[in-house]
Length: 94
Image (tube, rainbow, N blue to C red; front, side):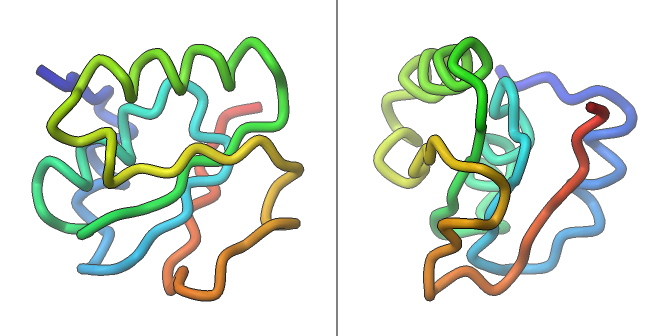
């Protein structure tokens, strides 16, 4: 079960159907929830630090039925944005 904080749940509820890129996704809960709830067919999760990126990929891999729809990217922000992205989420606290 994917648990969202009140802050992430509020953001989740604002996202329209899209191909999102969650920049600074940290643990990946938001992108996982967007995929699980069919708000996004697939999406991208971006991290720029090794530790958070490892946590992100570990959490994605914990959901085998969702992991083939989430593409983790080790990058600096939207530097490596994909052409199909039509919604960017920048909601990190850092």
